[in-house]
Amino acid sequence: MTRINGFIGRRDFFKLAGTGGCAIAATAFGGSLIWGKQDTAIADVNPANPNPVNSNQALKYLLDGNQRFLHQRPKYPHQSLRHLQLVAKAQYPFAAILGCADSRVPAEIVFDRGLGDLFVVRVAGNVASDMAIGSLEYATAVLGTQLIVVLGHRRCGAVAEAIKNAPLPGRIGYVVESIKPALAKVNLTIGAGDRNDDAVIANIQYQAEKLQQNSMILAQLLHAGKLKIVGACYDIDTGKVSIIT
Image 1 (spheres, rainbow, N blue to C red):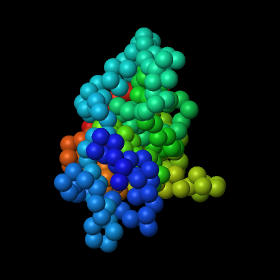
Image 2 (image 1 turned 135 degrees about the vertical axis):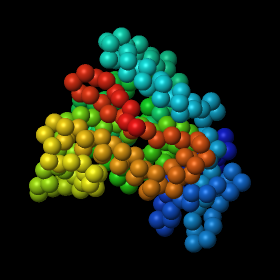
Image 3 (image 1 turned 45 degrees about the vertical axis):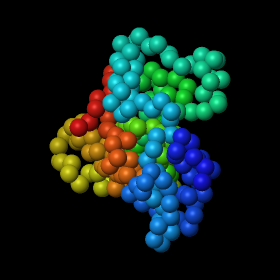
Image 4 (image 1 turned 120 degrees about the vertical axis):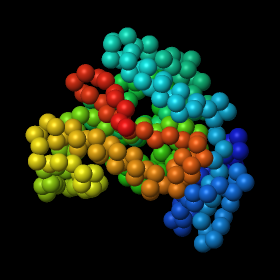
């Protein structure tokens, strides 16, 4: 089993993920990865990054970058040719973003970051699909990222469609169906603006919870104190990112 600083190697990670659809167990065993009953893997939780950024510092980097973007004072860090060549050798992103695919919410720009800083997964409605969860498991379990931000945004079209609850063509309905459970606690009788804002926040919280509930790898890292998952909402009118508690 190949390791990176005591952690699962990329090649073995993909072998593990594809072995008979086996799940990853949420319990560490002596800091190693072994096979247990019913061919269930037990994941290691040692950091892959030789100099990991802890979750609190990572969140500060993001919010500081957003303030620079918000006040039009960007530094454009890590965007030089030299840095491009550096991260071509290896990547150690300090944060992972599960964001909406909306063209107005590019994470690297709104957080004023550069090459190799963020591991970004974008899908309409910032939905925690199986593919998105697998990507975030890779970011945390292999690359050693200790922060996941579920980034939604105001006036999200996917959330608005979930509220409408009308038939949709093609596979768009798959996205909307993944958002509808988040609306269970939303008062859908209030005004359209407030209703949409409440639904966006509810969806951010729901998808963040889904990451923990549907991934034993992420749950294990959370339990070990090696991962934090937070929700955040981007205001497309002002450019401000607010943390959702």
